[in-house]
Length: 34
Image (cartoon, rainbow, N blue to C red; front, top):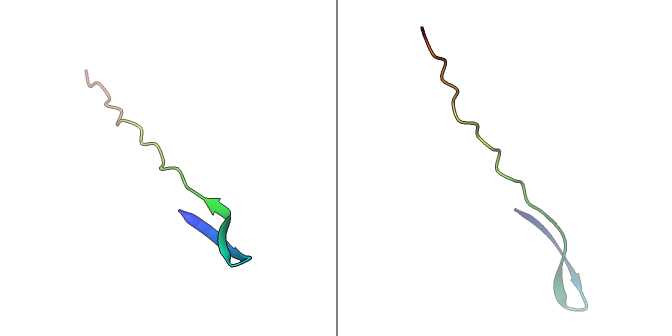
């Protein structure tokens, strides 16, 4: 997470934030051997 704060009138306010989603992991594909 990333938060950007700015002090306004003696109060710290979050002016921007960013959150990265975790990458989805595909289940391993198993090839059938005949």
